[in-house]
Length: 105
Image (tube, rainbow, N blue to C red; front, side):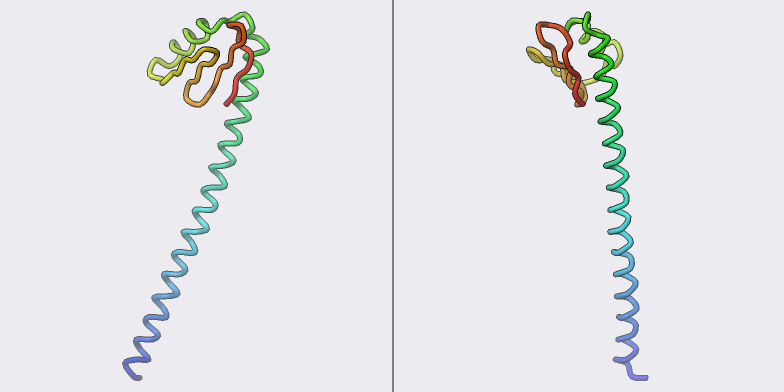
């Protein structure tokens, strides 16, 4: 067999192997992204449910009370306090007239 025929088949096999590898990587990335999105959606729903429960049963808590509780639960958390809002790790506690009115995730 000629050298160019041997080289052609070696390169053809290498091309098929590398393309198969990249196809696998693309499918794996798609599956990973899908599971990640499902997990994020579940977390968002859980935060919304717990937020609604907290708002329903936590009307007596003031902004200072909620801030104190959050600092006791997680001393190392980055808590942003604004006029009518407390933001801790992406969860927003919204206050109206110094009473808890809404929790968003």
